[in-house]
Image 1: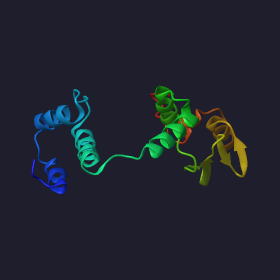
Image 2 (image 1 turned 90 degrees about the vertical axis):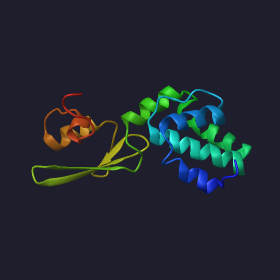
Image 3 (image 1 turned 45 degrees about the horizontal axis):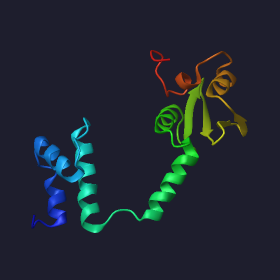
Length: 147
């Protein structure tokens, strides 16, 4: 392969999917995952650069693994579930209710509304609406149908 790295990366966009999968088998020595084309392109691009220029330093890998373990104890399934359940810390959820705009901030321990900490969005929704609500539905993070 005499192609330059930038040319190989650019060619990924126009390479047919079967050829991307063949490149995957060559570069990763495994079967390609059943993910979409964009995923294959991005992982192949990373791998091409990794092989040409070198990967992450071992100390960086160890640090990332430590951070991951601190977050979820190394349980990747647990991290995916948690990521799907709670918005990122610092996210501001805005809801207008009866002409008044309410802003809730996601914190590490839960949520903050009107300067007070809350453990659940449902408690905040109840405070705003005066009746019981599913907090995730109230703030539009989950549809009524899936609630």
